[in-house]
Image (cartoon, rainbow, N blue to C red; front, side, top):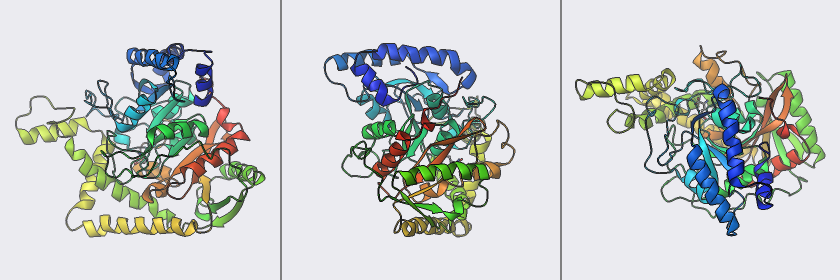
Amino acid sequence: MLSKTVAELATALANKDVSSVELTQAYLDRIAQLNPALNAYVTITSELALAQAAAADTARAAGQATPLTGIPIAHKDIFCTRDVLTTCGSRMLANFTSPYDACVVERLQAAGAVMLGKTNMDEFAMGSSNETSHFGPVHNPWDQARVPGGSSGGSAAAVAADLCAMATGTDTGGSIRQPASFCGITGLKPTYGRVSRWGMIAFASSLDQAGPLTKSAEDAALMMNAIAGADARDSTCLDIPAEDFTAQLNQPLTGLRIGLPREHFSGGLSAQVQEILQLAISKLESLGATFRDIELPNNHLSVPAYYVIAPAEASANLSRFDGARFGYRCENPVNLEDMYKRSRGEGFGDEVKRRIMVGTYALSAGYYDAYYKKAQKIRRLIKEDFDTAFRDVDLILGPTSPHTAFKLGEKNSDPVTMYLEDIYTIAVNLAGLPGMSLPAGMLGGLPIGMQLVGPALSESRLLNVAHQFQLHTDWHTQRPEV
Ligand code: GLN
């Protein structure tokens, strides 16, 4: 039962094969059993979950069920939750309880979803392995000596290990797609502005976007139906009418034109990953899609540009954590400056401090033009590469990551090696486009994902292609033995 998709669970709940209370209790039991080893959850909200499940059962009995009513969900600990800790993976917020729910949390709750708890993540979403968390690393359920990816590593591991039916994540440079790839699940980063960022702790505001981590593309569409849409509390949230993201799932792929970026299929990509992608391409061809080579000539500049822009925005966003207003305050400060310095010095971890220093430097007078302004110009070129490509193709396909999940500790010593993890995903955030990762094969017993990228607001098309692929393959149904 616990490995079922959201769509399957909704049917089971509707048929009264199981109640939401029973389902929720079963997930809680499995969490109690496996979370000590995986460390996917940092907070487990058992009582609240059972109360929400009972309310969901009552709503269903009264004929008021949506497709998500009674379905257990895990929220990345970057989303504010009223009366429940929101740590963002940091010592800085280890004691922080938000007075309100994030928009995403609020909407999923309104749709009847049952919150099981909050998931572990890289500190302030900065990382690709979940190793920067103040609460210790998450272990990949496929091989516990390996990372689950990051920064939404706890959410991805929880979905893969059947510790929830679905989860929320956020993606600033790859943090939904790369962990989805490493854990063998489906992850969607929506178009910038599709989903409200209200109540989602800010990392890099021009890049951050929330999205679903699920067991299937159909489930991602169901979650999108609940979370997407205008929100007056986030001025960057697009004011466009709501969409039914399931409406196009069954559309045939005949006539679909997919581009293969030369830059993604050369250089660092291993022959084995190429082979897996080739099989996926053949499958999509047999379903009616046609392929052609395209170019994204500025893709190699995406990581350097991102590592100026994201830290610059982070340095500004994280200035609010000063010991006075939120979270951690040092012991016995002697004066105000001492309080600021020691609270921030003791509250933030190394990677966060590195980003704040890089960002502050890049924004400082005298260096602004050389770094920040230049990075913004590169960002425009990257966006134009995609605009050009989408004149000839409907979607772009490539790898999500150059490889499968790596070992814990393997890439810790050199930040640049870790930054290169997102070589295929970061450009998508810089251009504000939707992208998704879905399971495409297995390599040495570990899952490997493929990435689909579309023009702005093409989520329905992406989900359609992913769903059709999943109807004809079974990579997404494979589960680790935990
Ligand atoms: N790995 C990238 C970083 O460390 C992206 C993280 C994210 O998407 N939140 O910044």
